Image (cartoon, rainbow, N blue to C red; front, side, top):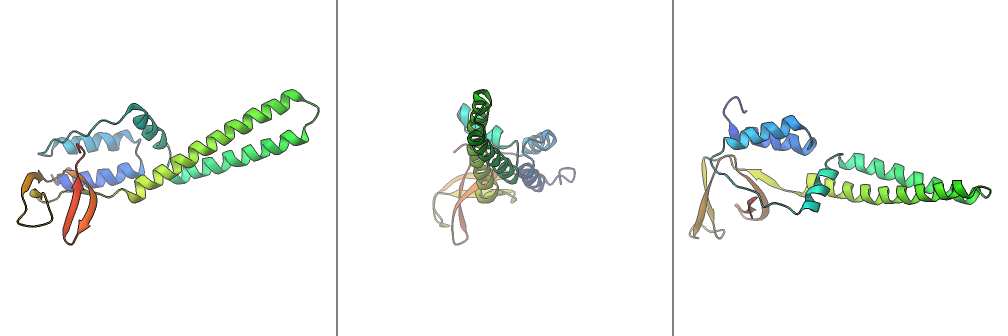
Length: 174
């Protein structure tokens, strides 16, 4: 689509690919190139540093992979806890088992939250790419309402609500 100069379709496909592999540098680079060919320059609101950190962390794996990591760490924690009760003679090994159990439980909690977050991002976030050459954004779902501004093809919007044939959208800049 990019080579055919169909920028909105290229952006849509790159966004879909990024949903599947968010850390892929080629996808991110190609999406950036496609966004440079759009007419509207919408700068997203920067997130707080810890939100960026969490997002980068959760993008390291898919929701299913985070769930597997969580289940493995939970089993490890349970095995360590059971091992603590069966080892009476060595205080050092009991401490190692205790520390390992606590760390595994922490990893379980983090991976569980990451799995929920990744699933929510993939399944529940509704985004759309504007395909028409220009679209009037109205203040209300009515043809007689005030026109706020015009969006051009290739702009990514978040779908907030739907009323009949009208969509309430949010841009990346708020």
